[in-house]
Every structure is written in C-alpha cells, then in structure tokens.
Amino acid sequence: MFRGVLELDCTSKTVDGAAIAVRDAVTAEYSPGLIVPFAFGAILHYTHMSPNASDVEHLIDDRARARATWQWIIVVNSSSKHAYGVHMWMRGYLTPVYETLIKHFENSGYVCHSVTKQPSKFWNRLWGTMAALLKLRPVLVALGAIIVVVSLLLRLFSGA
Image (tube, rainbow, N blue to C red; front, top):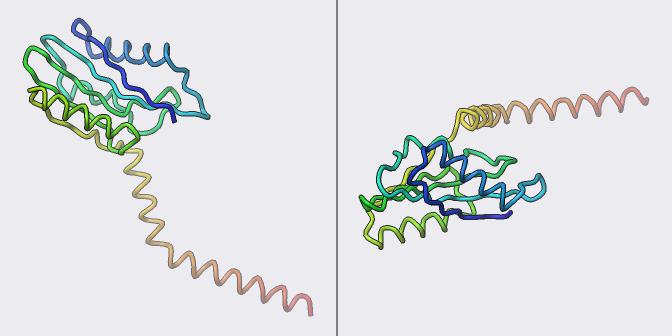
C-alpha cells in the first residue's frame, strides 16, 4: 500500500474548496489503482476562521476507496492556536503518523482534540448480518452434517 501525507494552506478555501485541493494534489502525485491502493492524511492550515470538525467529517472515508482512501484530517488554526483531527473508525498504516502529528501540535502549544468518524450504515448492517449468521452457526453445522449423512446413505444403498 502506498501512503501519503499532504499539508496545504487553506486560509482562503471553503471546506469543499479544501477537499477539491486535496483530491487534486493526490491525483497529481499518485494515480490510485486496483492493484496497489493508496491511503493518505491531510493537514489543513487556516490563519483565521477554520471549519468545525462536523464540517469536515464527511470528507473522511469509512472504507477503502478506488480513488484513494482519505484516512484522517487535521485542521490547524494558527491564530487561535487550536487544532483538531478527525480519524476514520478503523486504525490504518497512517494512524501512528496522525497520533504523532496531534502530539506535535500539542507540544507546540496548540489546544488539540481528536474525533473518530463512526462507521457508516453499511458497516453496521454488515456486522449485524454477520452476528445473525454466527447465531445460526450451530443449526447450519447440524443441517450440513445431516445432508452429508443422507448423501452417503443414498450412495451406499443406491450402489447395492
């Protein structure tokens, strides 16, 4: 897996403008493919007004994407000395980098906090389905054993 960290000055950008700038930078530097995935994090610098965590949370991917997976974002406001990060619910190769950068900003005098983007409905439904199948496992195993025994008995008696 290829990994990257981008750092952009987004002072004059809206959230959508910053997202486009990040995706353009990823596309310019790397062409994500099916064989070798790409994951990245981004540090967005603002000098005055910066977006809230709830404004940028939707930018973070909740699963691998063919166009590259945006695992985390750190928004830094240099005038208020605040920084926050939003990280996807799953830990990845870039999680230690994210944690180190949050700690770096804390050590540099910034007030920092971190938010985890919760899994989407897709994951919750998938996990619910898997849990239901696990509850059915004993019944499915017994049913499979009965089918095997009946199949063997049919072969035994049909060949006689």
